[in-house]
Amino acid sequence: MKLEEVLEIVRGKRLAVVSTVHDSGAPESALVGFAMTAAHEIVFDTLASSRKAINIARRPAAALVVGWEDDITVQIEGEARRPQGDDLANAKAAYFREWPDGRARENWPDIAYIVVEPRWMRYACYAGAPVIEEFTL
Image 1 (cartoon, rainbow, N blue to C red):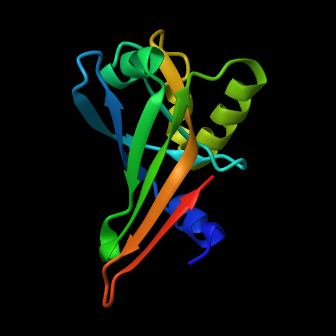
Image 2: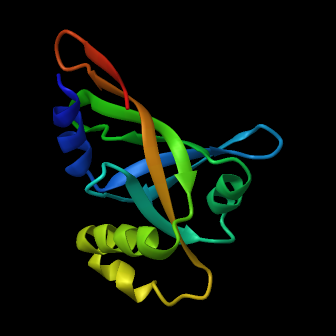
């Protein structure tokens, strides 16, 4: 399995579980709809008042799990940020291509966009003999 193949698997998915870390050190997870940018970053929207947005503002570490169908998963760890300027425009464009209904939330007063830059990925397939590949980005 090559990195580009794993990225294609992620691009083909729409949902992920994202985990962040609370100030107390406790993990917190949530299901999000996401899109992948041309730079292979993960983008999703949330409320700025959500636990994940608050956690990311304090500690930018994030982990995601994508895909659980067909005994295939991709784990992603990276650094998260709230994009600004052109970075925000690019993130929204990628997100709206995947989630056109996201435009209806764009003007919500508390909407926030989060971008996760992957640093590490792990592909695992348990259909038949296990295949596990790790990648550092």
